[in-house]
Image (cartoon, rainbow, N blue to C red; front, side, top):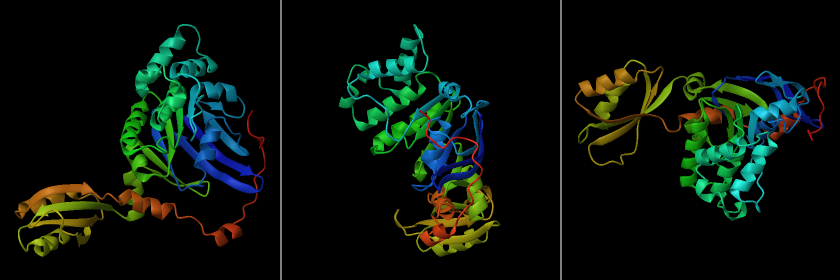
Length: 336
C-alpha cells in the first residue's frame, strides 16, 4: 500500500505539489490525470525516490521514502517520461545490467530477464542494440527494466507518449496486465488511456488532488447523473415519437436527437439520466415495439468530468494565489 500525507514540493518559492494526500491499495492500477504542469511528474518522482519532498510523508509498503530511500527503491520499478536506456547496449545486456543494479544475483538474473522479456513481448529483439529499436519497443524495454526485479510497486510516467495507435493498444494491454501482481501508478493527460487502463482516477490540478474515484463515481459527483447513447430502429418519421417516449421514462432528465448517420428509419439519442435507469429505459423502448440497436455510456462523459475538474487557474488568479510555505521537515535537494 502507498500512503501519501500532506505532501508538499517547492522549487524555490514556487509550489509544484501540495497539499496532497492519498492512499493506494495493493494490486490497484491508479491513474494520475491532469493537464501538463499539474504536478503529475513531480509526484511520481517523489514516489520513485528520484526526488525528495519539501515536507509531508510518503510511505511505500510501510517504508518512508525519506528515511529509507534505498529500501523503497528495491520495491519500486520506475519508468520516467523518457526511458532510461543505454542505446549502445543490446536489450538483453541492458536488462541484465538493470537487474543486477537492483540487487538480483546469481541464476535469478537470467530468469528475471527472461520473464521481463516475455511479459513485455520484446524477446524477439533481445539481441538487438536498443538504439536500433522503434520508439514503441524502447518504451517496452523501459517497462521491462522497471519490472525486471519483480517490484511490488510500478510507477509509469506517460507510458504511451509518442506511440502510434497500434502501439497504444498494445501498451494499454501491457499496463493492464501488471495489475494485481503489482500496484501500478500511471500518469497521463490522455483521457482514453486513463479510462481504459485504471481502476481508480486521481484528478490533479495545481499540485493538488481535486477529485478521486472511479469514472462512474466522478461522473455521478460532477455531472449529476449518467449520459448514455441510445440507437433505435424507429421507422420512417418515428424519431420524434420515440423521443417523447424516452423523455417520459422515470429518471430521464434530458433527451437530444443526434444526427442520423446509420440510414433511414434509425435514430440516435443522447440521454441524460439522474440515476442508472438503463434497465427501465430498455424495457420501455422494447415494450413500445422499437428495435434496440445500441445502448452505451456516453463517449464524452469522462471528458466532461475532466474539463470540469482540470480547468487551469488563469494567470491573474495564479499571481494572487499565495500560500504560506509550510515548515520544512525534509531536504529540498534532489536525491543523489
